[in-house]
Length: 441
Image (cartoon, rainbow, N blue to C red; front, side, top):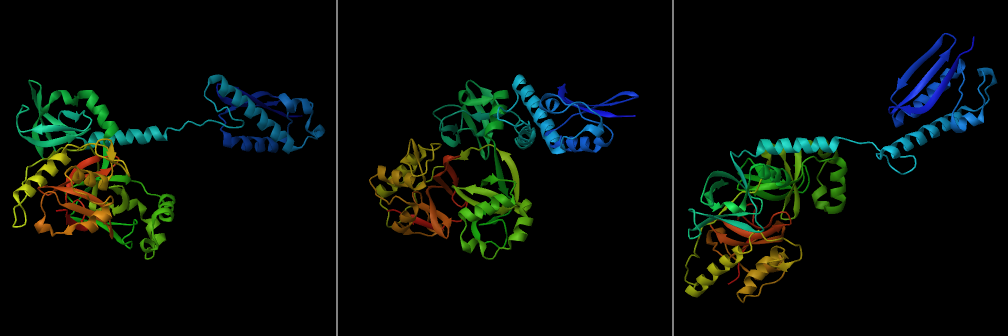
């Protein structure tokens, strides 16, 4: 009694078919064959050669005739190669006909739903984090004034930059009463996106933030407590998360490109790589640093409105009334550019500037010349203590050396060109530890 095995490489409904023939009739089995299983199937065919033979289609069918096992002389290697080649060609042809395949030879397009899954998970997190009874989002190019009452003649008490979120409390005669952060007031309704459109916008613009759970928090050069302290953060601000899920490959590459020997020398890399799940990377003023998850809460958030309070410059024996007036004018002038673009190396207050270009441009408008870079500005200004700080002073930040500068506007706030994501914004003056407070005049 002889048995035969026929391997059919054509597809039926996207499945490859193996048919076994014997004297008792036909037995048929189907296998949904993936690319990685082709060699396994070919190897299985070799094992079955002890009781059957392989009549082939295509090139292999032309190479040998259908004979019992005793008459087969074709090598298994040539046979397997032929089977795989036929299978590859038919699969490629089927993909091309359906428009879903890769046109490159021998390639198979595999559709992954991982990005879709990650996007859905992100959207769910955003929905859970953004708890607004009635969501409104500022639809402006720069900023939207928040006023004490409904009317343009009333005092400005806050500002909402582009895509800032708020809770709409009520609407009447073209004005909306809103609450955002610590600001409660009125804005023109025409500049708010609402309803489903606001929800869609929120999914696009909400940013993962680290909310500090302690009064002062150390951030480090690397994700390890053995790494030197980069800076200190306060609980007055939310900080943008640059990367939530750290990997050994990512951190290793970051070290080779950005870290000095000082940052690495005391770090046990094996321990650090084993604890990466407990750290995140932050981005603050275009600087990257790491913080432990033990002291932060991660939330997707929209920007919040900032409070604007008028504060006149404190008088002193060295201040004339004209100088005090200039400082107040400097702050008012700087506020006009809130929400404008950040551009590294830029000096245009309207089209894009970096931090030192911003402060230089503000003072230049009033006839004062200060250097171009933040470190040079720090060197050129007179140091004052935090108890002596007054509007118009410059705050300098960095890790060991100055790398960022901001303009003090009073009430514990600064205005600065922060980064490409946020542009020119208002922050707490102590959102990070200042290295120096400098006075220009």
